[in-house]
Image (cartoon, rainbow, N blue to C red; front, side):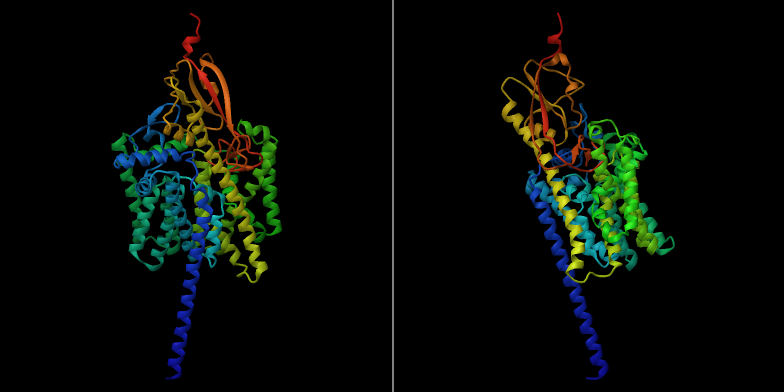
Length: 570
């Protein structure tokens, strides 16, 4: 054998060994991520249905019976019965998925949560696959995404957000591959995923302008590949037409009107938007000492601390509510999250300034666009609207850290593991607190069934979310404020930490007696508590996605009532 042949064989052997090694690393990384997802989420499979889970479960049950009419039923969600298509502000594809899961495994909490654990797994593995295109450290990017409170808590719900995120990531991945390999079939798959993403949650439509701009910057021209973006546009137009014919109103347009009707932009909202971004994408804060100079950290801390100090002393107005009584404590915690939010945005800007290519622009628009939507467009700031930016923050962290070279030695590895573990620990803590809050609503409904329901008296309730789901499952009905009817001895249960629930809504003349029962939430953290300033699912509850401190008991008022006319003088 000649020297050239031996050299060629040696090169081929080295190349084959390298490819095999890379594939082995990839498989082991994917296996590790799958194990981490299972470890983090399996303990919460029994979590009670929470917040808007009830709406998605009811829609799924409707779909199981009438698949062509997902919202053709009535629900009392805003104090009086309304058609479901007026109440919901989300498209139905996640409920179709849930109906499929229930057909296989049933309607129990563990069965449905297991189905959505698979969705969370897809989102993490998709983040890893996308990050492999954008950084040499894709495992770090995916792990940082999993360790973010915004992702972990959202993955324990049955709402559409994590499913939309998984579809969002794969749509970008296929589009980037399609452009690079000039494969129309990959672009078509991406376009289909964009359509499915937008019909899972309307925010998915933002992928169209995002990928349009990315493609034009990458290719420096307008070509036929952009025509594929018309497919999701056509799908959304078809959905608008279909729901308009079915319900007399196109639901896509209705959701946009709803968001704008309740939105109010202000400097305080900017701070809340930063607070939710920093709290939900917590690795941007925990990794700060590794990626920013002391000067940059001090500047961000001064800006965040100064702005939140003005909130604490009342110069920047915080909406009236129980958090006003603890505004100094709230503003101190808020300052940390605002600093993290500044760091997340700075990561995107810094990466774009340093690299200036299409990939860095994609990540910049992805993060900034999501953040602007969360506080400037959406009806309220919440973790669900911030969630789409979390994987992009993870990818940017990996891109930033890789500039310093691969870690060598145990000490350098520990420098990466510590901030990941810190963020992951906080995320599990907050997820446990949210699960405890959800479970308390289920326990309250069970208490009402076992202790308060007696023959001859009617039990009804105010409040919604998961509490409403379980109360209705036990045969109790929500109060209809448009048609209040009560007989002597009837009972109305009113939670204090819920929506559309207040003792004052019942006429004083109708109340015979009042008592309370409560369930302590001893978690040291809160996700929906107005006194602590936490509002993970809506900043109406507070300016932070979560807060630390003594968690308050979940209190329920029990009113024994009669018809108000019985108390009137004759």
